[in-house]
Image (tube, rainbow, N blue to C red; front, side, top):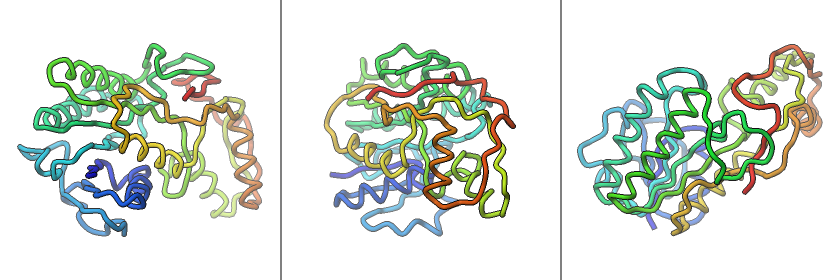
Amino acid sequence: MKVAVTGARGFIGRHVLGELAKRGLEVIATERPALARDRPGTANVRWVPLDIATPPENCFAELQRPDVLLHLAWDGLPNYRSLHHSETELPRQYSFLSDVIRQGLPRLVAVGTCLEYGHQSGALAANFETRPNNSYAFAKDSLRKQLQSLKSVHPYNLTWARLFYMYGDDQSATSLFPMLKAAVAAGRKDFPMSGGEQLRDYLPVSEVARRLADLAVSPQDAGPVNICSGEPVSVRHLVEAWIEQNGWNITPKYGELAYPDYEPMAFWGVS
């Protein structure tokens, strides 16, 4: 089986490559041409230079005609409010993916976001109505709808994997776990954060990668699915657990930062 992966150099992508390679699959990983060096040392992976912003005429052939495309690439993060997502990234993404599908791709697994649910609280199932309230979530949700509409004129299998929260090494420096780790490394005694009472759904990135790999090798036309733990955990509890597990000498300073206004206080996924 041949699996192509876009966004293979990203935080999730690097873990996905390792997971797919362990399964003995033929993996085609894309990278922007300017980055064609210092590649992750993953066996059974063939690298292909490809930029979604300026793709080649026959993308499917350039991807070595895979059985499935695991699409992780997305530019412009972590600024969720930036209009880049809806004005630039959305049309760019749909143009690339629709071309690959029309050229013969039989199956697509694309990642979405839990932010597509908007301000809905509590346990969120994948079949819930989406109510995006920022540019990033709107663009992701719109892309899903466009890809679903494309199926009516060009049949193919689509799985839309909504990611909840995750943590692990090599994550963006602006994410919670790396910020805490960096504060410890800098010798700081205090870690300013929000009140920490918000409930979220977290998975280690290794588990996220495993589940995405499972979806990639599944023949199902699954539609929207949640990649989640199904268990709500407070951010306060999570940070305190990380500190205890790693033996770090740092104290969270609750209430120093405001809660994000683009997400509800309590929500988690239902698998």
